[in-house]
Image 1 (tube, rainbow, N blue to C red):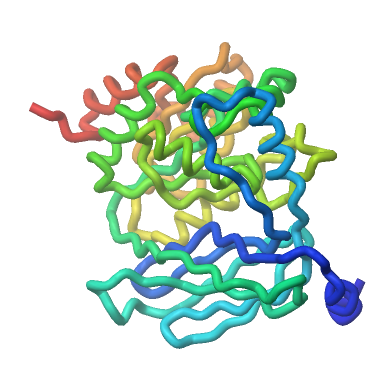
Image 2: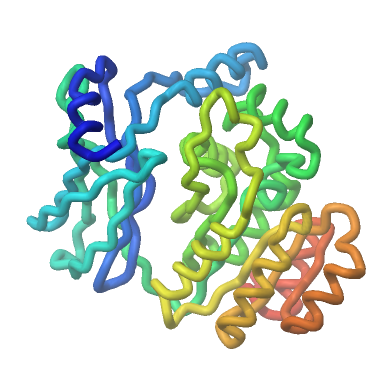
Length: 333
């Protein structure tokens, strides 16, 4: 369907539509913004006392939203105006090269849907911009790295994803202490890269706030998940994780990174590829073991980049001990 036909059809859209901004971060010279256009929906704040049945209803509401492909989004930033269209998943992104003219004041980028017109005019969405300057950074996976997800067991993973909320999902023991110390009490920036879909963005953010885990730009999988394929969330091809990690390395060319993941999916192999491309910019790799890594996987990594920078751990306490021993973090007296 061409753009003109799409807009004519969507002109009769009955639902109210909105921009859901996800990312607005960058360096001194440029920022990266990302979001999606969806049909508007109301979601009550989760509670730890809510029953599993109500959590399932909330999940149904979350995944019942429709993404709007080929929507035209207007972006305003420091007096500059940009336009961008969403892709087939309703997702848009834009690189904006505008320096920060007000160094002491917060920056905000504004979004508005121009096409198609919904039941009501699109409301203005706004997000604060995070300009990051640091010599060191952390990139972490989410599922089974900070959040217990049982990614290797589809049945358990599916039940957790639909029956729990941000306040009843459980973190890996000791994650909060490890991440707060590794970020030097949040002085060092942290980024999250995951195969979870964007419908879980608010759940992940609320989970981290509730569990005292440092927040940071969170890059998720773009493919739209709905009620028909909800069980696929977090699965499938993980190549996008490598692409997003390399994007962060390019956005911050002077930054050296710690990489954190687990052995349940392909994090060790993905991080080995990163080391191969940027051997001098990876400080260390922490991999939480889920079962045994396997001889063939170990041999493949060792032949590719060696094991010098890899630390395979069974707990966050063990990772914290290694980080202290290798002086990756400041030891508190």
